[in-house]
Image (cartoon, rainbow, N blue to C red; front, side, top):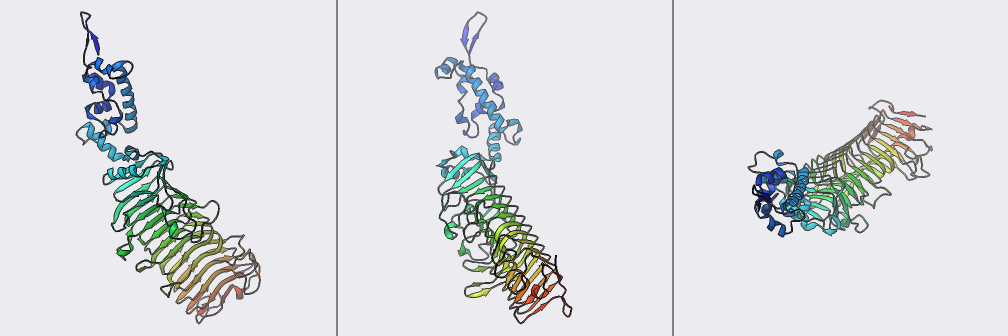
Length: 535
């Protein structure tokens, strides 16, 4: 820098270092001291070493721009100010770090590795898988990867084969897109033989490119698939046009049971739009928690075998306060067979709302100790709640000990098919209490509809304190029946129920067709304790 001395002589002198650092501020000091964030950001900023220590004329000769050193420093100061605004100032960083460089480096890890640091483009066209893999590898144990706004595409999908990590974005603007017949994000190892733990995924949007139509194995790919992972939490994400929104899957089938079971995974507060097969799959889990998710299909029902939530071979699963519309089934609970069999046991389906469904909640082969509580099932086409037996390896396998309490089940007023508010076949013990069913059979022109249908109950069923109402009644055995019992081997108790119809007929409202067991319309030795009312 030029400076005039007393004799009028002009000399080039080195810029005073303290004055420069004062001009640049604390972050400028970090840059001058030797680079920022392990050269990630320093490489993008011009070096000031020669400006601080070198000859001004030499500096100008290297193209430092208009104004020489002062102009260069002014431009650098502006960049530093922008940097400070985005990451904070060193004085606010962790005090235990020995120097400002360590503070900046460690703070960057604490706040998360940024996907764009590793070359991700995010234009929706460039394949960003290599950048993603590099960024995942750079995250320390317990650290996080931040996906900034953009559309990040990978033809083979993105993978996170490790645990102790958080993956997060800025909301729906942070968008991951996977190729056809690929999981957009796969958490876990490819062979599903190494258990990983502690993974959080939140504030992202997931999309899959469409695959073949149908509902078989070709459509089992998910927006987020969790393989052999314990304590994963998938929350506050958006899913659009995926075969499956979220799949919680156990380990490799060669591990057998219970080795392949995974524990305490959570799917909560996600939004799913137009899933082609399933919203959420719970597959060989223990203590899975599925809460507060919204799953909407905008135009029509997906292909056959579409479930908002499917619960297979899992124990102590809690499916609570979810909402779904236009699925063939709201929730399907069932046992599962894969190199061995595991039933579905000790599950709770509670406070969910399903609208415009063929079936609301169902249980099939090997479901035990289940609670179906206080759900709202609206515009049901066929069955509100259905439990049935199925064959497994040539043997009939049923259900046992199911409590169905406090549900509201309303028929689709436009449905003309035979429908049932609740149907239970081939099970052992049932409690059906405090439910309301409305309108079943109202739109029929032929066939039979039932509020409760029981077939092949092998131990006991208690139908108690329910409210059944329909607005259309024809006095014969094929229309709008109340509680219908068939082929029961043991006792069915129906008491304290209310039947409301334009032409109530007690004989048709509470009837046993066949079976060696008893239908008790109250307590043993007591007359019919049900009310048959005309509105």
